[in-house]
Image 1 (cartoon, chains in turn green, blue):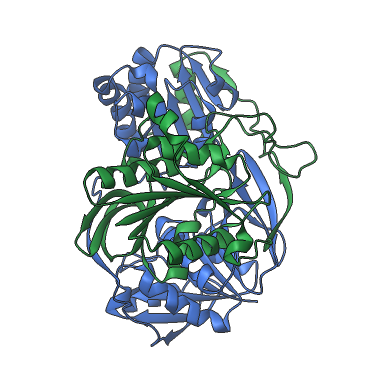
Image 2: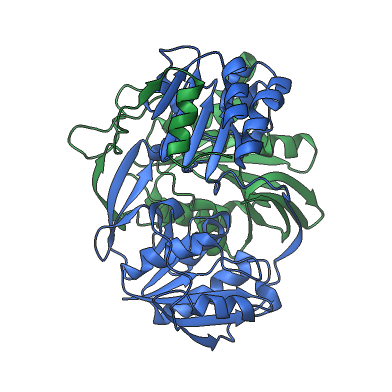
Length: 249
Length: 309
């Protein structure tokens, strides 16, 4: 079974996002960019399924600028077999990404597509579910465990208040949550090897997908700043202030 | 504009997150509800009493019992032929279903809205709330998810919605529910708790977390949280993590204990109404966002607080 793993290049999660002074977005010039953390978990899960003998080939895909090649090379260094870059400098919305992935899924016929549940830049949490709608496949979102059994996959999902397990017919879509696994670091030899793994470059037009945005960003602003608080001298003062606010046992 | 609001329920009662979605939808126009599930008469009745509600569409079918999106999304898409906006709470259920509906309608969803700015414009958090985007849709229909903490809850009485049975939809036959483990503890869920007590790396061990953090949370009926550092150090399980890559929370009161306040963590809790920080390092960044800060050794201050509050 082939596994398709879409990955996104985003602002590194340890970097504080700075809103541009002109209110057009977040400043991404000269800042560290990395693979979206949830996508790393997706790549790791695919590799584990390959190590278990469930998967035979892992294809990493990214829709983004030329530099997203670096993100794909990271996926290859972790253990993906080949990569496809759908290159565009435009910001592509989840719906258009899902359409591109649908076209790739049609061509590659994977048994599973494993995606991060959301990218930590746009925080949309949509692409996997949209791809599931467009392919007509079942979806296991926010996965904390993935178990392939014959022509089905059991996905344990992190839901509000606990866990839920669903049984999905393959091919299926899985989106990852934090608890699914801990992604490995690529070793130096594997980073070197990844440089010679195949990486195809395509464009959205190759898949016949119009990426013009449906949602326009009018402005991006800083969130409201919290008013400066007070320091209390001791526990008694803290207790008094909390009780005044109605916080007590 | 006619809106269709997804009613999240547990089979017997309407969940609170629905009420915030109703308020958001009411800013757009007429509010209709969809109650899907099996044996949901009681829920439908309760839903019809929510203030300001028009029609309550009720889809009672075993295929809808577990909110499987493969079965539910086509139902919603069909009902959307006569509605202009689908509005779901940004819960794990809403987030699971809404994008599937959006793609079926060829609509780009707007996730996690914080406010309604106009008939097609909204604000929403990006970068884990480190920036707020004002966005405008150009699609013919809207698909929205609503952040529950950003809107007042609609009143659960005073409404007189008209209940109408829907016969559409069924089992797509590609997915089934196997089981659920829903935490049955007395403790509230992290994402809906009014009070959260979180511990950080300064605790030093899982034993100290148990000894210092848990009693305070018990006394206040609070949910338990932790920083990524505490999770990575193995003091508590992963699902305790509050932060950009963990849970995003906005309780009435958030206790950050022995948490320095890394960007990652702040992104997950800075919308809390009141932040209380206890840390022995007076220069810790957490004090820049804390409403009440106490510079003290947590191992003596927290037990004292637990005893006195």
